[in-house]
Length: 84
Image (tube, helix red, strand yellow):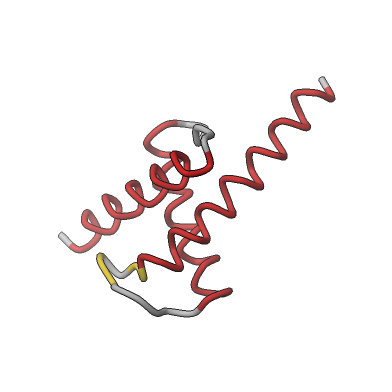
């Protein structure tokens, strides 16, 4: 049940990051989950583990990390589209 909870929280974090940045995460729900997990990892590296923890995610650093990830990913995808 813990793994399923982590997938749900990771998906929500990725979805929220996409909504805040105003860009859709590629690959839908799977992309949101991946963005949530990578964002949580990135956020914990940069900001540490502080704030409320839900589903093994420190919510605030995970959300900030996911926002940074989605923003950078959107810039890369935009530049790739212009190059084509």
